[in-house]
Image (tube, rainbow, N blue to C red; front, side):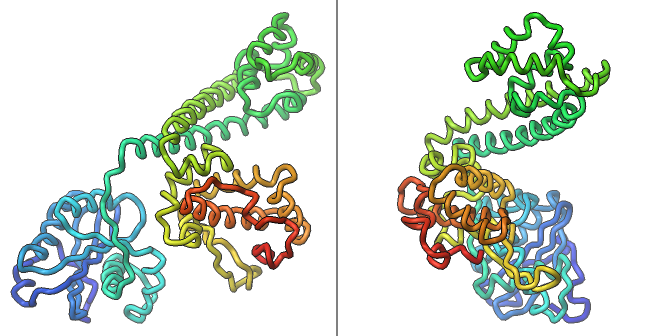
Amino acid sequence: MAKRRAYRAVDVQSVSVESWLAQRPEGRVWVGVDVGKDECMMVVRWQDGQFERPIRWANPGQIPLAVGCLDGLARPGGWQVTVVMESSGTYGDAFRQALADAGLEAHRVAGKATRDYAEVFDGVPSQHDGKDAAILAELASIGKSVPWPWRTPGSGDQSLEHHVAMMDVYQQHWLEWSNRIEAWLARHWPELGAFLGLGTATMLQLLCAYGSPQALAADPRAAERLADWGGGLLAPSKIARVIESARTTVGVRPTEVDSRRVHLYAQEALTALRKVQAHHKQMARHGRTCPDVQLLAPALGLATACVLHVEAGDASEYRCGQAYQKALGLNLKERSSGRYKGQLKITKRGSARARRWLYLAALRLVRGDGPVARWYARKVARDGGGRGRALVAIMRKMALGIHRCRRDGVPFDPERLFGRSCDRTDKQAGLSRR
């Protein structure tokens, strides 16, 4: 790449592959591709360390032209071509599929590696599309990339991924509407939350049917309807207390508009809850055929096991537990500025959804009086009452345990996260300073 205006791009239509092949003997070439939503840049790095100028092409309209250019380099008698991309987003999936159809090898480089190498590459810390593409090619040439073949997932994996994604979407909807209902109840019926769980099917059906405590108190069939909605889980004594709270509530009397509003809230929340239950049922059906899910589900819960499998893949395919931990964004980094100087924090890379579900699984493990709960209580006391660090420490241990169990083909056992005894010293537990 010439030094003068080194990153000035040329259009893919003006590229002459024949002139490249005529000037250089065959060998190996790396092509870095920086993918954008509307435009992509690719830079060719030759075996002797020289670069061509960045080549600009429209995404997705000029994908055939870009792949045709690369295929021309790799034709018989040409170069051994390796195309290198960053592992971010889905804008490059159509390009990756086209590369696979053309028989071209694709590799992947982590986005952080590209950022870290920016100043090393040309002495300037700034980043832009042409430079990033050149950095990708350079990193691949020195062995800092991994193969990234295009694979069409099987129908079972696609179905499981679909149900996980939709369950998570509807659960977020249910949570949003439940939060609005909680605010409404705090104003108009603050006593109800003591008897019925927020966002449960019984509460939602009650609010859909009545819309106010006064309407429920005036209905002579209220007890019968509540028993029908709650089934065997709602005791008659609790039904009586719900009706009594409707008669004696100290909440602000709702207007007609207030009643219509909570009716809408409850209706939307109930629809979302039923969608969550339907997708959870389908997840259970597809999860029965997945060994990864079956090993984890008894201890972590079916939903958590399915989410981890979809978001992070099969844990047994990772070379070590730390690699799986890193894929979940639970590896540690040191903050050395401001009030966090010298403190360790998790990187939070990877799937936020997987971390959220693993966090919920950790909350379930610290209940009761098991080894994990005892270690958690000691850790919280040692940290002066702070619970967050203790839960993150358990999540990190869980990631290592999940990888070990999947590799060895044994069920996940929470009691083995901290050894045979929770009464070991902090140093033996391994997480005292995490």
